[in-house]
Image (cartoon, rainbow, N blue to C red; front, side, top):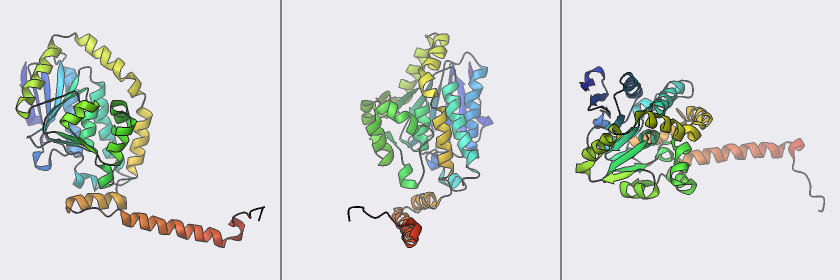
Length: 294
């Protein structure tokens, strides 16, 4: 069955070909960064695969050869604050739960940059195959955001606690070859062979029991599905990041191609704490206890 439905969407391409659903973020001009419309379309397209039980698997990828996805679109995220952030966060959670809840394997086919929220998108998928020019990373600490919708939950389980903290705290990136070695992705191939290697994987699924794939995916996800409470907490934490001074500084600096100045916030916070402690010292009732041995 071949059915091209790309005309139904504005920011993604969707095609069912040879029992495989191909879902492509089609915003190469911004390295396939996603915004609300993109997330809505990804959710709709992936959920539609349930209407055709002949589909054996789905592939999520990005247009062009520069990026799988650079993550959230800064212009979209800069509109957010802790009040309206639920609209964005619920879309992110909705996409993650859609991918994990599908009864078919979902493959992330990564070509180029796979960063921030784009990397979390790859983490939600069951398998990751990448071209040798791909780079994986978390950039939240550079731009004042928090990767709490997948990265903080899954990375320690995939690559270990120490590497996960280094990747998130220090914005460490991994080449595709490094990512394979540490267990972050499944396979790396030459860029010219990426599509064919992915199609070969998809062909293998056609010879396998769809019932087994469905049931074992549920079983494999069982333990990490128990992390749903952590996702809820992560979205609440993230809601208070959106629109904050540090988030705006980080994103503006990126757009202006300069280094962010986060040090000014440390100095501001230092003065705030100093004023607080000075106030305590001036209050006789809050004076520190005397050393009984003095």
